[in-house]
Structures are given as C-alpha cells and as structure tokens.
Image 1: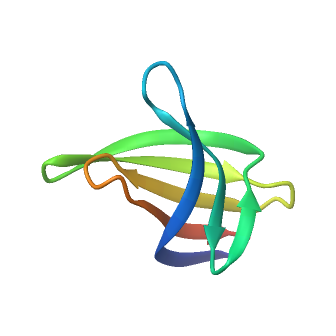
Image 2: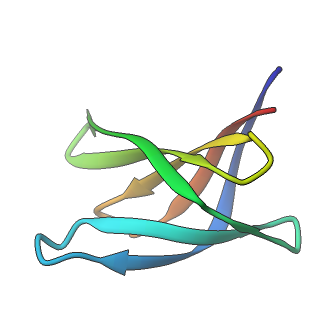
Image 3: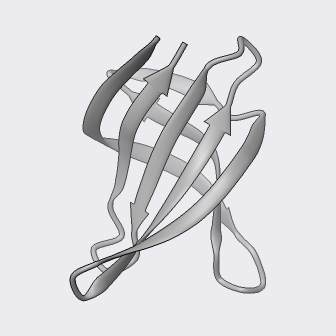
Length: 82
C-alpha cells in the first residue's frame, strides 16, 4: 500500500565528496526513522531548481520516497510504501 504524504521532515544526511547528500535518518511526526539502504536516486528539474529524490528502505520492508530541494535545502517525505 502506498500512502502519499508530502510533508516537510528533518533529515540527518552525509554529504559525499561530490556534495550529494545521502540521508541516514529522518524525523516525521515526532518519530525518528532509520534508513538502512538507499535503493534508488533520481533528479528532477522543477522550474529553476533541481529536486533530488531518494527511495529509502528500513529494516521492516517499508520504502520512503524522500525529496531534497537543492535551492531551498528543504527535505520532504513524499510517500511511504508499506
């Protein structure tokens, strides 16, 4: 089941040498979610900025679609697949 969320979240990320973020955990609705694996990354141009999208899996088999706005530096939880 896929739930569309589209809410702002707080993210802990590591920035690699190429300055690309790699999310490690996020906080949504006062709960911290640990990311075990990034399964896919893609980039979409939206107007004058780029959005980075991450498919992030946890240990329970859930996949979270997370976006990062490279201009505003905002992270969003787009959807959850349980």
